[in-house]
Image: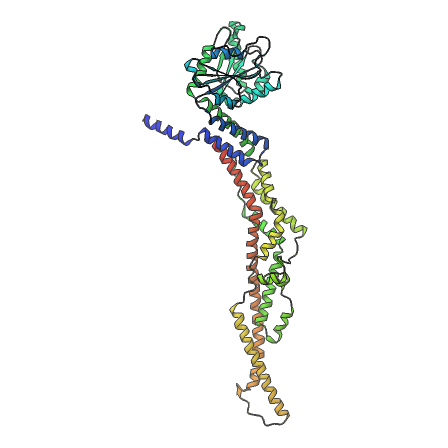
Length: 544
């Protein structure tokens, strides 16, 4: 049973991302968020990722511990007491630590790590074996009047593995310490220790109350149960306890990973607060349909559709109309050719035009396009945080300056289907020609007979059919048949023209839908994908 539990625990640990994976995810999140979220915040997160990657690339056999505190807290005395050597100058009336001093305990001098920390004053000490691998830093005073000292403390506080805050009975409640450092680093409690130094200056019966008050103030900072060690560097009180605590952290070799994990959690948490952690809405079909309708209106699709219907009806009349009057339709210009549409590549080369002659969008139509685009952005961006909602809005209009050309290209490049000739048109045209020949033949025949009768010439016998002379029958059948076929053709052509117009409108809307997707929907979806990417990376970075 125990082996099964251990195996399950190992499996769970493997499923969790490593510190390196969390750092990589944090860096990827910051990279994607760049330009979308606050630049200063993203820069801070990127700095955390870079520092973490730099620390991981260095020796994992060393644990960097920094002694930080105010003027007169006794950092240098503790530094000497822990290392067992007089390495740091000790002053009793004024601060003596103007630059960071580093001491590496053990056989390895840790020069690469100290170079990364940019610690120039360094010592290599053969300390007790239990402290082999400890890199102890004595930082300048955080309350120093020298600005350079503040910068040095702030820089190294971000880099070290363990922070030991040294306070004294007079300054342990200093607001600058609690507000500037302790409260801000509350998420790093696993890698922080507080040392109350100079306890020898407090009466023994007051020490317990002093420590209780310190614990209370730390709890107010969010640092409950943080290790607190009471020491006196002068009398060596608590030094062994502090050494044991540091030796345990060195031995476990977890401090660096814990510090990096805390940094990642804090940075990822800050970035997630700005990024948000909600499911974005999908683009609804009605909103996309409204966008396509606005584009169609701006592209004069109703005008084009009416032109298709009239053009098809005109061509149909030329094929099925009575030949003696159908030629008149050729005198009327083709509505599509007037718009420079559906004339084919050769026609465009001949006219020298690459654009349609449809009306330019009116201000009202442009306003409808803007409104439809804004509706799309607001619909999908509503659940997002303000920076992402703004990014979605900016993406939705980023390519609108290209909309006029894109709409024109879509209309010109769409096969409207108006130039196709149905087979029945050809059949009707053939029938009309035959009926026209019958009319001409019958009329000529009757004309010849009339002339012969006028000249009183002997007339040949005229064949009869159905009781009528054949030429009269041909004339009547040709006229009646041609007119009847033209009337039927006109009705059917109306149906065909309306059907072709509906098909052309469908093709035009499909082409304009692609334009809408390219100019508006695709940029919006790219922003949503970026948001989801940042959100997923932050989820990995926050996994512990």
